[in-house]
Length: 290
Image (cartoon, rainbow, N blue to C red; front, side, top):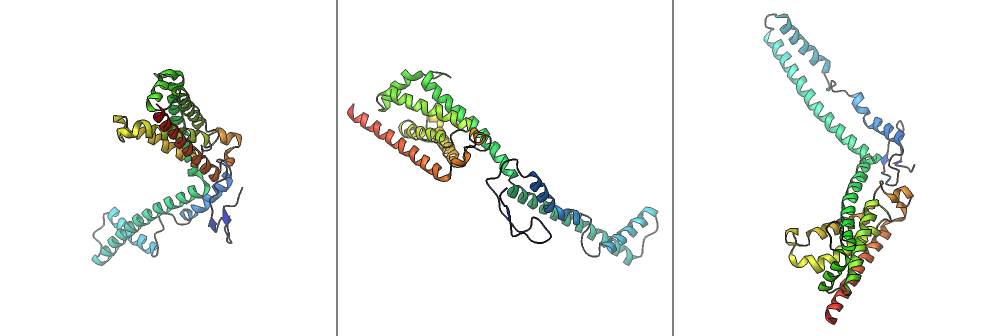
C-alpha cells in the first residue's frame, strides 16, 4: 500500500497531510479505511448532541424544575423564577437545534473527506464508466454491423459503399468497410474495456469524418440529421481516451491498465485526429478526379 498519510503527528496514526493514492486497488486496505473512518467520526462520540456548551447543568436543572411544577399541578412559580426557567428551557432547545445542525454539517464534511481520501467514491466512478461503456460501445458496434453485415435494419456493405461514393469516397466499398470496421471493432473494444484508447480513437476518427461530410451541413440537432449524435459519440470517445475503461474492464483484469499512460492517450488522440484528416483529404481528391 502506498503512503497516503505524510507527517503523522503523535497520538494519532492518521494525523497529518492526507494524500489520495489514485493507484490503490478498488477493494484494498479496508482495515485502513475503517480505522480512518473511526478517527474521523471520533468527535461525535466525544461530543454527543446533548452536550451543548457551558452552564448545561444549570439550564437543565432550571428547566427540570419548571417541568416538575407543571407535572405536579402546583400553583404558578414566582415571576422571577418562572421567567428564568422559561428562558433556560428556550435557551436549551435553541442550543440543541443549533448544535444538532452543526453536528450534521460536520458529519457530512467528514464523510466527504473519508470518501475522497480512501477512494470509496471512486468505486462509484468505475461503475458509471462501466454503464457508459456498455451503452455507447454496444450501440456503436451495432452501427458498424449495419454497414458491414446489414444487421439491425442496415443496408450492408454494397449499398453503404454506393452511399460513400456519392460523398466522394472512392472506391466506396473500401471506405464503407473501413468505417464499418472502425465502428464495429471500436464499439466492442469500448464495451469490453480492452486495449485502452484504441477503441475510442477508432470511433473518434470515424465520427469526425461523419460530422464533416454528412451531418454538419444540416445543422446541429438530430431532428434534421445534424451533427448532434456523432458529436456526442466523439465526446464520449475522447473522454474514454483520457479516463480509461475503469476497474470493471478487460484491461484491469489482465493487468494492462498501467500501460495506458497519459502520454499514450495523447499520442493515440493525435493519431486518431490525423487519420480523420487524411481520410477527408482522400475524399476531396476523389471528388476532383470524378
